[in-house]
Length: 146
Ligand SMILES: [Zn+2]
Image (cartoon, rainbow, N blue to C red; front, top):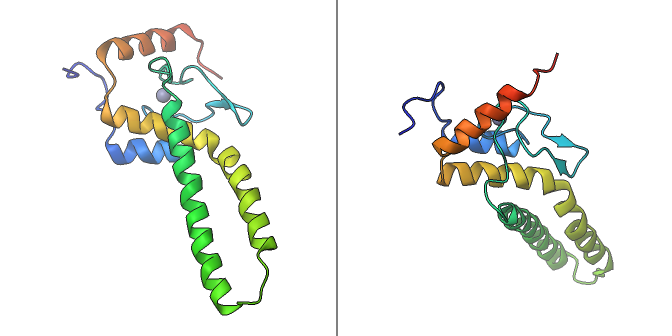
């Protein structure tokens, strides 16, 4: 299984590093997005179809939620430390900052969450031979840029 692949499968660390930098987890190619939200259906280099099954990117929402909640938790802990030192300070400004971040962070992390999820999924469920063949066929179809 997989012994006929031209290149060895990337390690979990490589997959995650590529995912965290908005790159194709499989080959490391960038430029997967048109704008901030529109992800290419396939990798422009290796042809991998990112949506591996219907509803695939539901996992990306979980990643995005976890990242946002993690940041808000750290912010809340920092606020509690700050509030202990200033018991008379109001909570309007910290509350406003928290509310703004709760909206802005998921938007900022959205493309990263998708590629991180894609990397995690490939780490847990390596690319099947039929997916690799489909990717190779799609990659061969399109003219190489430049
Ligand atoms: Zn790729």
